[in-house]
Image 1 (cartoon, rainbow, N blue to C red):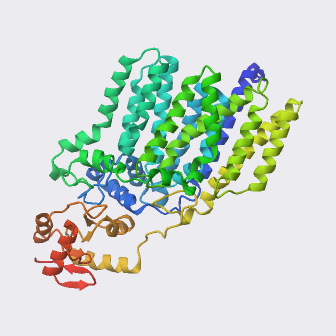
Image 2 (cartoon, rainbow, N blue to C red):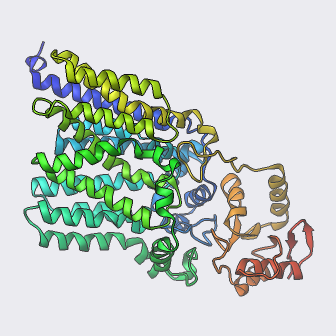
Image 3 (cartoon, one colour):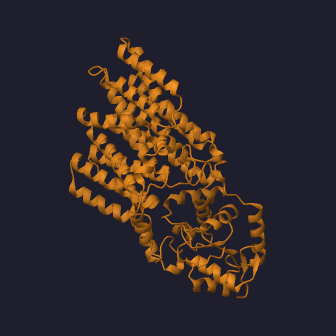
Amino acid sequence: MPSSSRDPSFTETTLIRSALAAIGVLAAVIYAWGITVRPVHNYYASAVRSMAGSWRAFVFGGFDPQGSISIDKIPGAFWLQALSVRAFGFHDWSVALPSVLEAVATVLVLYKVVRRWAGPAAGLLAALVMALTPIAAALAKAQIADTLLTLLLVCAAGAWQRSVLDDKPLWPCAVWIGLAFHVKMVQAWLVLPVFALCYLVFARRRLGRLFVAGGVVLAVSSVWVVITLLTPAADRPYIDATSDNNPLSMVLGYNAASRFRGGNGWRDLLSEHTFVQIGWMYPICLLAVVLGLLWTRERSGYAMWGMWLAVHLLAFGFGQFRHAYYVVVLAPAVAALTGAGLVLFWRERARRPWLLPMAVLVSAGWALALPHRSLTAAVAVLALFAVLALLAARSSRLVALGAVVGLVAVLITPTAWTLSTDQAVAKANAANPSVGAKPRKPHLLSKEDRSLLDYVQRGSGNARYVLAVDGAGPAATLISQAGASVLPMGGFSAKTPFPTASEFRSLIHTGQLRYVQGEVKKPAKTVAQKNVAWAAEHCPQVRPHLYDCAGK
């Protein structure tokens, strides 16, 4: 037997790697379970299918196969999905695969970040908590951008940590944040005050590197916007959610400033449904931040992750908290503080034997007090046994057993919620993925949709579009499920002024568009409604709400 196999440090390293591998496999199984039957998000799936078929649509995030209008976001979150579809074809699993890989990568990267700061045991616990966070599991199977956002921000946290602890340059952290901006835009910048303030407090070299990093963040974040601004409007899609076809309006207006108008953030953030996504570990996190700053020398991690939590909670509370899945970006901070906190409490057991039992008791009580609680008896029994074992035992083995049982008591309820995402995966709400969300019927091609599509495809010949519809909603199923070249007038909200009346009539006059579908609204308030009204007035109705504008 080689001598290295008898080395305690070698054995410890092997055990740690084995434990990390087991956590990674666990996360992969939970996250990947059911992706072949997970319903896709029709709006984003349409864009992904269009982007997979056209490099023009790929670069600019074209919603329809012709790349006529973009989605209402920078398309960074969907580039990997489009590449997956381009490689494997359009399937539910090929659309979801990148999100699964991103979620598993987040677990593994978080281990590395926390290990560097608080040690391997804390890293393993953080990875385990992240893997068993309900909203992370629900979102891993979905198309939503927040999974990739979370991964990139965890990578940024790792780069920030290397700069602070190892005196490395700060600009790699800025690059990760800039990449994250292409996924979720201004939300990616919420970590900037966190990293900047903590860097000023804990880093050896301060203002110079901080200014350089700020410039790098702005430069990397601006890449897609600059490319879009420099591209002639005729050579790219119209930018959705804007009235001026300007990407800055979409990024800084529709997706930033407008999110702080008339929001009900605190109400939704503190709702019962949102709490069960991630709120199980809040008491441990709070205790970890306070005691970690008071008792340890590794204060930078406690300060950074604590501020990460605080800044995001404040932003969500004062803004429009539209979807429960937004809180997934809190998960790395919750997991990191939980892992580091539990290890800290364990190390303090000789001087403060009451600390770890108190943390278990408070966390178990919190879980029992939260709405939608489950496994009540199991949590109570496990917590009681753990507390008694930790307080009364003289045997080190019994103390260790008490710690393990306490960990199970803390994690058993969120784990149950996490596993529930696999049980209901086929009925999941693709538009608002979260644990306990009401299922939404998947938008599949109906007989009426197929009949309509067959009809307009036969009559359209080689026309650029087989159909124009009022809004992206009616177009999404036809594009995502059939790849049909449909013109979504008005974009996502049906209110974007595209195409204009002259552009719309030009498409008809030049034979690029024959059929128009939509319900006539009086008075017509949007550009799309006015185009439908024109078609109803000038073109014969050949089917309910379908107008044939050939030769007009």
